[in-house]
Length: 191
Image: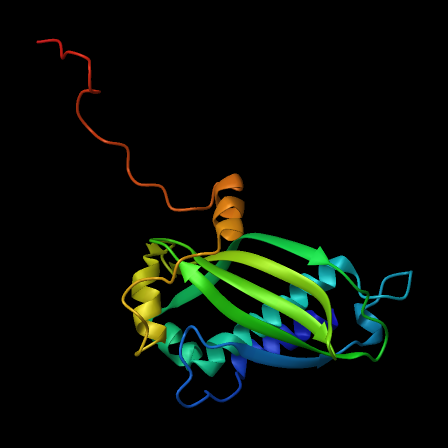
């Protein structure tokens, strides 16, 4: 519940934009583990990591002044897929940071990495595939979102790491080119 309230607060009262920040620049969110984040084994519950990642992504959008820009168009982000690799437990009162960065995008999906660190220790790494929708439910092409959020954004995505591309294909979230129309090569059409 703690992180749900924090997310609501960040949604309606986003932090101030970071001057000069681009879509490929990392965003850092500092947090501390609270009692409501823990499970019965007294470490951060695996589901809470996803809620913490939500808060950090909203901070990333706010850093780009995206809260205003997206709100004006009535566009909003949704998670299409996520995977978290846990390495070290976060315990009560630990201070940690989440570094959020865009790895790349295709026609419909943006790929993000979120790394949870406590000091020099990596505690967890999340990959997310996200997309943007409008209030009428239609999908927004990712290049349009990138252009809106990053005035100095490159015209095309940087190449995705091979392991992220394989992950996206395995979960069937990667952009697929439309199937060719017309007869299949080597076949004949009936009159």
